[in-house]
Figure 1: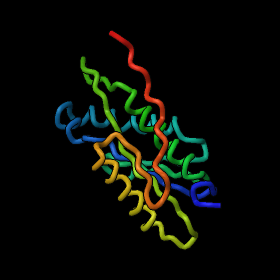
Figure 2: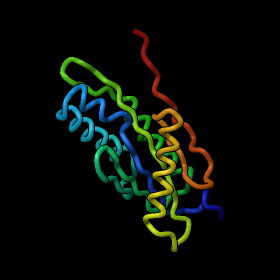
Figure 3: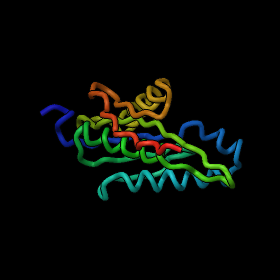
Figure 4: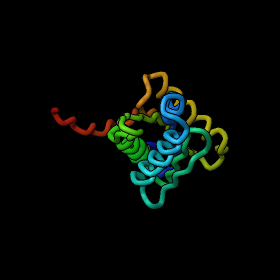
Length: 155
């Protein structure tokens, strides 16, 4: 069984794209609202056995205790689409917010947590370099499948 088909612990580091500009433009109350709503979207799009936590600033950690690479990537992609589909309201303005995520697996029991998080962090920065609003897998796993984007309604 390969890592991509074996049930393996996976983690994802999720970062809110351009979060500083939200705080600078709309104020810290708006930033706090975005943090709470992004957390709610993340929690709503993972399994009850998965974990979601804020690890600092505008970064979150998703923990998938036993999934395949494809399942972990699909879950992270589902979170990305959920956040990108939501319009955040600040006063009279509705604003789109996106996230980027880096996903990594604990392929052996001997891998240290710090190395696992570094691999997820490297994948996160690959998503940022690719233009943001993306999910990237660390290591040798296949690229994540794209979730279907919600259809835009004609005005």
